[in-house]
Length: 218
Image (tube, rainbow, N blue to C red; front, top):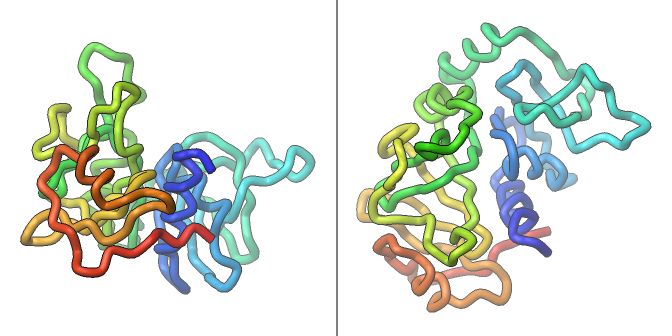
């Protein structure tokens, strides 16, 4: 299982019945392919869709239907589509229970940088800043290290912030962290990953929970 699938599968375990969940582009959108069969979650795309499911096949794909990353989606019974103004009224009105966004960096106190690397072409901030302050719970999804092995879970973010102190949970391909008032708490590790490996590859200060569990990736 590749790192992105590990993260996407673990994200899907946070879905529960009746939740309105916004998914950002990239790995978060991929989590729609792993919704547990027993869970009736209402997924929202910031570009104007409510109640969608997994990726369609080439035969069932509709070019007019896409998620926040422009990839095809499957609308479920009872789904609706609408304009961007309505979508952001939902977000800014506090009607999104949880948002899951990709990140470039996250910090131990819940800061997130996910929109700009100075000097590198950026697609822009999109709706991230609205979601980070409008959603009731924020999950940051991120590969634990960069290509050189440097931690992306930091004491302080080095890139321009999208929002400060808003992240509640961090899901990486190695671990799950809860951002608490006391600091960053390690609660889960991926299959085959030890607590020691997570600590070695994490720049941030980490509090190890008394009972660290193995991620469920069903």
